[in-house]
Length: 523
Image 1 (spheres, helix red, strand yellow):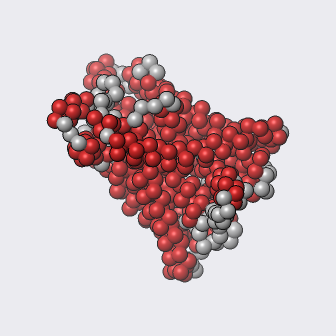
Image 2 (cartoon, one colour):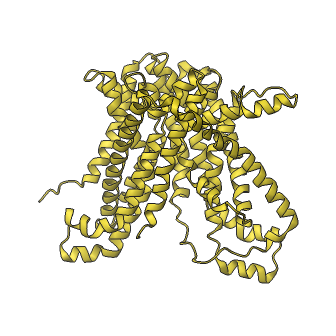
Image 3 (tube, one colour):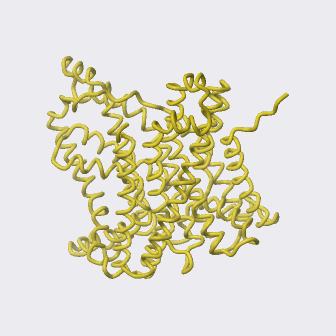
């Protein structure tokens, strides 16, 4: 009997699971055995209530505004619409720390909105707490919801629009029979995803929470590790967060696995409801409300144009180089892991004929969404602490954790192309004896190179703007651009913060645009 070596993707899957399990075990061991979940009962209840309430409110508001914007944009054509759609598609990579800066600039004590209210005789806005957190979450998520919902509305076939016009559908019937069936295919997944992102929110809540009474589980884990050095409490909070996020991720699995039919090749549909006067007034109100809310926050970043010269110093260039190096390493790691996991899933599905085995590899990227990055980082830091100094450990752990955090998004770009290559050329490759590097170069690479390049750029954008793990390791020896921005905000140097925020957004925007264009280039 000949023993076959395991597939490299299987070894990668085991390594990821071992890394996560080892990190949690090290965190529990560092915390000792004297503490547990029950010892933090009242505090845990307070954190859980706040996390659930703010995430629920943020999800409802984001879905409400995003869906209304999508319907209004589907019914209306106006100058600048394409530019607006491009902006909506890139909000996913706007760094959260930049959103914090935007909220403070517009709604803070000396912000535009505050000055307008003061001039009109109204009182100041209490931005810290629920108001600031909800504004930032809606600003980050509502445009993304609008973009995805609009894409879903565009999948309604032209034949259905012609039939609706011939039958004389009213606006209510159009919404019921055409718009709503398209929306309900994406709204459950969007609701789960937005809830998960808001439930795990860190930078927004840390900066705009206003005190220990306003903390999510992610912030509580950070405070336990960074402020109190209470590893046991961090481990207990992490286990609770993992349990809740796994439950949400399991609900997320099915909606995200949905693949809509290929878009019909056609022009813009002729919507008879676009002529309805009441809908015109409603859409105008929604677009004005949306632009009035999102526009000032987005434009606030441009205030940094006049202060770019003031921040061009050695600290900025060092932080920029560090951010690019970490983002590049994280993106390369995420792409390599996604390729190997996708290849293993393909091998299980097509060669071994085991769809269930393949689904286990596909589940690993989603599981990583449920793992608190602070807890995993702290556990791994406890392992490497005896072997390296903190600055070096941070330089190693930052790209590792950011790469794992980007893996779910990269996997969804790479794995479908691997499956497609097998479906088209699998039998031919087997008959010609192509395998290994030869098969990758001749069969897979032509289909992979564009989405892989796009996934690399997207992973770089996500890692470049991340303000999470750097909050644990950041300092004079290790400083990224988001950390430098946070330092300037903490010192109330808003002019310099605006310039740094502008640089962060520009780099993330360019990477996101590159990611959005590559999959279709010469494909």
